Structure formats: structure tokens, C-alpha cells
Length: 421
Image (cartoon, rainbow, N blue to C red; front, side, top):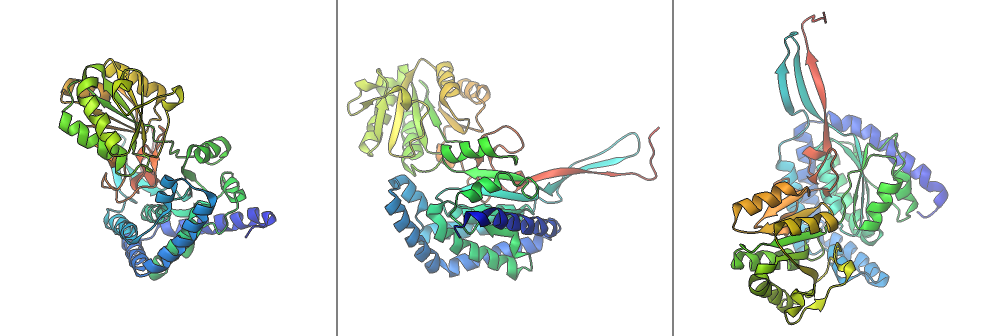
């Protein structure tokens, strides 16, 4: 569908159907939601060859568009990645149902009993780029939390997302839940995105997941509240008291395991006292692994590095490139992160517990790590089954957004003919 005239009408219809499904879903039993997710997981695995076939069309489209290697990696689905998707669906299915959970319960001197209880948010709009597995993750998490969801995937992953969406709808049908609970916008037209951003009557929250351009557009134009997932400008600070072996292992994994994910390390900050020892070892290992290291003046003494430019600080490469800078200590590292970071994930490598505490308490990123790879910045790795994104804002949801973060709460107040004096 490319007829602009029909986009507002199309989106209004999708929104109205999502709103009606959300009402039904809010009262669906935990058992039916579990059944829908297990059935969807089985359908994804059973239809894996059809999904891979659809993905081949998207890969072709991506090549024609001239997507970068890291973007092509995000787009690509093979049997292993489909197995990961299936595991994610099953994992979300097996989690405790957040809806109806009593978060707090207390009695007042007036005789009232008050409970704070988790409730669904309603209808969630998810706008994402390239990664087709988000179709499964976002669909599953929204469903688990009793929300209807409108998915608008990137034009690159159009066919893959459709093939996955068919499986999610089969799960809903099998469990006797409304198919409109998980809808996929059936057009590549960007007008659909702009339409979603103003659907205040039918969408309760928008979750953008993608590059700076997409998130910036959403934040600027949305009339609907937004859980922003900003860039992953991820820093690792190597302290003078870091363990050389741990530093080598963690930095290599954080940079090279998968360069195209938001938890990949983008900047190394190395204590000046460790520059010629641990720093040199780590940088040489990165270069040997095929990483281009863009270093400041001090670290350029290490053979094989390239000179960093001013715009290398605060940059998300999503590629086999890392910036590296020498700093005078933990305070200077924290100042650099405050200036250039994106509030996503930052890490310290040190054996000194006081220095670690200073870093962890002094910074305000959504995720702070000590002696661990930043590639763990992921809802699945946090035991949430999957995530809809990493929220870098400070209101409502922060860090990995799992099913529990896709709920709000209400107060239930019980009396016995109780009146206020």
C-alpha cells in the first residue's frame, strides 16, 4: 500500500482495533497468554524455512540500498538466530505474569487497606529499524504485559517481519486471544510512522528502537509519550589497578563479539599509569583482531593506532572501530563520560573496590558495570527473557525494558463503610 491518502485511514483503523484488543487482553488469564507465546514459538520454528526465504528478499533489498556490513548483520536471519528468537518467546512465556502483581500493600489508621497493583499500559507503538527479531521480542513482551501492540518495522526487514508476525498471530488464534492484539503496519510508507506519533487517542506509549535519526525524529514529533532508546555510546574505563587478563578478555568481547549491537564498546578510557602496560596489551590485541583503534596523542605511541579526531569522542561506530583516550584517573574518566556518553551503558575495569564504587555511584547511565563485558547490556541477559529496547530516559522505564517495565499501576482501596472525618 503506497497511497498516501489512505495512510491516516489505515492507521486510525489499526489504532481502533488495537484499543479494542487491549481491553480484552487486560483481563486475559496468565495461562492464555502463556499458551499464545508457546504456540507462536512453535510456529516460528516450524516456519523457519519460510522466514529465511523472506529474509533473503530483505537481504537483497539491503544490498541494493547499500547497507553497511553491521546493518546487514543486524538484518540477517539464519537457523541459529531463529532458534534464539524461539528461545526468547519461550523464555518470556515462562516468566511470572506481571499483571495483577501486588507491588505494595498497607493499612491506614483510618481503617483503609491500600494496594498498589500492576496494570497494562494499554496500546504500545513500537517503531524499529532493520532487526527483524524485534518483531518477536516486542510482540511477546507487550502481550505478556497485557498490552496490545502496533509494530512498525524498518523497510529493510519488511518481508522477515511479516513472516514472523504470521506466527505471532497463529499463537493468539490458538489461545483464543484477539489477533488484533499484535498488529504489523502493512506498508513501508514513512507517513505511517508520522501518523503513529500523533495517535494520542489510541496509542499510550511509543518505543523507538533504532539509530539517532529515528529516535531524534520520534522525540521531536511525538505527541504520544516516548520511552527513548538513544545510541549506545558505550565507554570502558581501564583503571591503573585493573587485572590485565580480565581487561584483555572483557574489552575484546565488548568490542568484537557483535559490533552492531547497542552494548558494543565504542570508547576506551585508559588510566595514564596503565597506558604503557595493560593499555598497550589491550590495544595491540584489538588491532590484531581487526579493530581500527583511533587514539589520542598519548596512545598514538602504540604501533598500529590511528590519530583520533575531535568527532571520534561521543561516536557510535557499530563497526570494528574504537576510540581510545588516556585519562589521569577515575574522575577524568567520569568527566569524559558525562560529556560524551549517551547514558546507556558504561563499565569500569579495576580490582580496587573504592574506585569501582566511586564510578558506579558517581555516574548516572542506565546500566553501569564492573569487570564485565558491556555486551551483557541486554534484557535477555538480565533474566527478562527479552527486551523491547534499552531506555536511556529517566521517567517510568530505564535500562532494559522487559514485560514488567511495560506496565503501570493502580491503587485498590478497600474499606468497610469507612468514612473520612
